[in-house]
Image 1: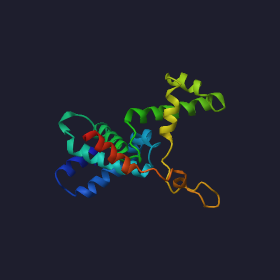
Image 2 (image 1 turned 180 degrees about the horizontal axis):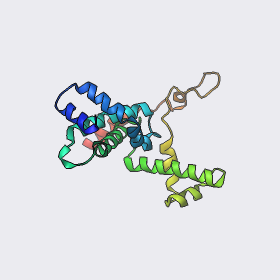
Image 3 (image 1 turned 30 degrees about the vertical axis):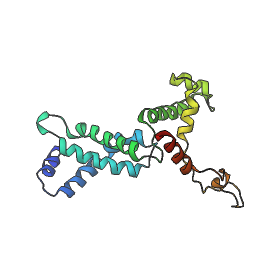
Image 4 (image 1 turned 135 degrees about the horizontal axis):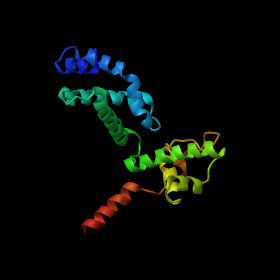
Length: 185
């Protein structure tokens, strides 16, 4: 059964779950190829789940009369679904898509330069290859770092956490309320 025939069966309401599973499994290698560029940001299992939703959207919008193969059409929907997932839920701190793309370019550039040079490249070499300002790299490096919990242990004897290093008299809530009150007066 071709992808196009499976899509017709799904759209006609015949064994939708079974046919969606068949469509997904038959095209899994191609789906993995579509989402491979995004694998650096989230676990592959999460991306594959989101790709399934993109495949479902492609089934809903596909027009057989256009003489376009289904998976060619579905590529757009799968990638879009994964990209939206990454932008909305991919990390604790939302990173704009253009910055996320720069981070991907940065990682790829560093990897290529390490292979070419046989050593860790300098920031100037990275910036030259990426054709960006050297001043942009520290921002990208900061964005690439993960978020640390306030309960992260800083001492080997478990006596000091990250939260212990924050100034005790700091009150974000009080300061925020004071700023709001000052603006309304």
